[in-house]
Each structure stands twice: as structure tokens, then as C-alpha cells.
Image (cartoon, rainbow, N blue to C red; front, side):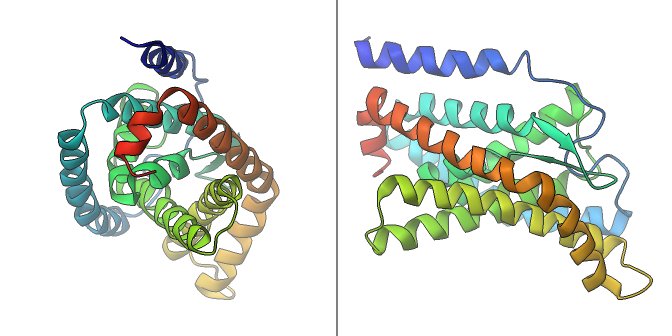
Length: 244
């Protein structure tokens, strides 16, 4: 094993160790039982096509170069660690970083949906964060919608010849914020305001989320840039095979 590969393995090990010390909380994402059954089913069905494509894309990526497995594992660990650091916010939910911008930039949004749902299942079953009934809603907001925006923004900014570090920061920052826009919509759809309906509820939820989520999104953008710099140093060949 080369020196760079050893350093990459150490970097991955650090994140994996953090999985065992992530703080425990009583609520994360949209909590268990908070959404009506019809919305649990709806969001779950919407997620299925993205997960199927994501599974096929992972097989393709690993088939092209097995060395990218370490980067994939590191990206999943990054999602777990960041999404485990949360601040209480809207009733039935909370604010936290998502970590999914990194996966979207490196592997695309569909692969990130697989990483995200694995993290969500792990947290729901073993850490009592989020829930199995709300898995579809949480997966769509954090592991699909947010990463899609991150991926689109990164590609658009690249084509506009924006500095690469700026591209990464903006993609991760706005992908995080969009996740909470979707979460606000999901909560408002399930619990519309008596006065003003869904629109009023969205405004209320976004107003509450904004106070805690804006600084978290900035931090996530910075951390994502730092991790990419580390990967460019220790996993240059793996990133090349990902066409990054």
C-alpha cells in the first residue's frame, strides 16, 4: 500500500470512528410517527426510482475502479457525522448539517441517495433518530432533493469557470439550505395552517429553521471544501477515476 493510500485509509478510519461517538438525541430529521400514513407512503414511493438508479450507479462506479470504495465509505461517514450534530428546531424535527453535498459533487445525487438512506436507517434503528415511518420523507429531503441542487449548482458554476473551491462551497451550502426548504414543505403539507394554509405553514417553518440552519449551512460548506482538499492530496488517483 502506497503512502497516499495509507493516509486515505487513516482519514477514512477517523470518520468511521466518529460514528461510534456521535451524540445521541431524542429527535432527528422528521421524527417517528409525526407524519400521517398517506404522506409516509407518498414520500417513500417517490424515493424508489432514485434509489434504484443510485444502486446501479454504485455498481458501475465500483466496477470501473474498486479503489473508489474507500472514497465512497468516507463520503458515507461524512454524511453520518455531520447529520448527527443537531440543534432542536421545529416541533417534530431539528436543524443539522446534512453532509450530502460532498457525495453529490463526487458521485452524483442518485448515489448519494443510497448513502443517505443507509445513514437514516442506521440512525433510526440504532440511535432512535428520525424514524422508519418517516424514512421516505427524510430520505427525499436530505438524500435526494438537497444533493440534486448541490450537483446542479456545482456543474453550472463549473461551466461558468467559477473557482473550484467556491463551486464546492456554494453547492454544499445551498444544498443544505434546500434540504430544509423541502422539509418545511413536507411539514406544511401534512399540517397546513388554519389561517393561510400550506403557504403560511411553509413560511412559519422556514422562519424557524433559518435562524439555526444558516450558520450550519455555512459550516457545512467550509467542511466540504476542507474534505475535498484532503481527498485531492491523498486520493488523487481515485478522484481522477471519478472524473473529478
